[in-house]
Image (cartoon, one colour):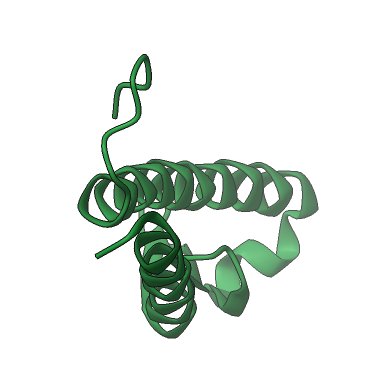
Length: 100
């Protein structure tokens, strides 16, 4: 396959990766399970669940949401980078000086 064909194939592979990440979701819960956030692997929030008892304590709710959302976003970042590296390695020809 020539370079142009490889680049077109890589473009398709990255589009497939984007679609796969957008259609895959996961749920991150707070340590005590009172807050859970469901989002796609591309960080689109799909659902937030909050235990009834937390609604009375605004500050605790804000803290748990912040921690839980940041944990979920860290998973998204790590997975997206790993998947992009894998897709690039599998799709692109070796490029001198570029390590993946």
